[in-house]
Image (cartoon, rainbow, N blue to C red; front, side):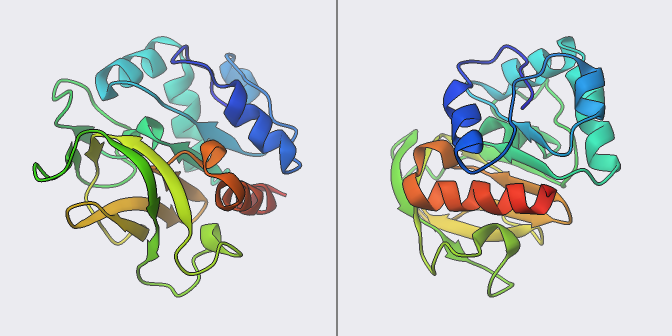
Length: 198
């Protein structure tokens, strides 16, 4: 799990350990290169996360892991960093794995979305991240921005319309919600990611 100084990551680390991963926080790019799987967390503002990732020296390691096909899970603002940028911080560049910008959630809804909400599968009837989660699992969100729904999107939630909640393309997965705060459903998703890395 990439530790680039953006908050308390212990709960996510412990959740991964709970489902059988030998998870640990890393600050050294060399450790990322040797990892069987990589998790990119993120909390707070998009620009602050993008800068911290770059300044830590871990951005290049993250890009290398994605390019090498290493299983890669991005969570919350980390998920948004998979895209080209965000309206929240127009000056900050994302990783550009997927096309598009994260935009503010619909003005008809309260910001942030800070609640449990249901995932609804789009496309593939059983995308790999959602195996064993059931048809419309409840998960916990805390965010004000979200990237567009695209070909990589495998599940959305309804928040004034469909909001991209989960993506999967090859070995790159991204969750807008917090798996470590999402009870059984979140642990099941993490277990699926650990299985992908096994």
